Image 1: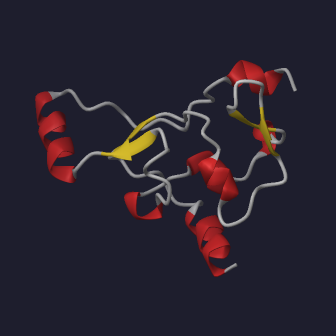
Image 2 (image 1 turned 30 degrees about the vertical axis):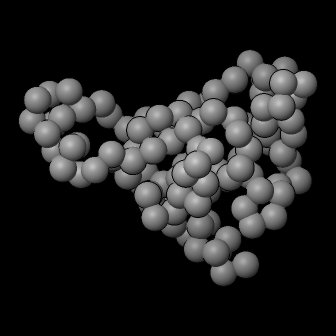
Length: 111
């Protein structure tokens, strides 16, 4: 419960600038620490959220920082080193951080 409370409180903070990638709909984060009651899987085995449009900030921003990423082996998000990010910024190649893209958004809209 302590981790869930901490995740909720820190979800109000911005996403780290060095986060890259996108949601691959693995569903691993939706099982932390217990399976979410809104977690569903489609016929291809990809996760969907039955409360997607009104999901809490902790779901929208997971993983917000590298230290919060508890599922690096399955998650589509990753973090670049700050040194690498600095080099990208100097070269003008850094991409802005975006809110998690609704991977498979069509699946969510059809529910």
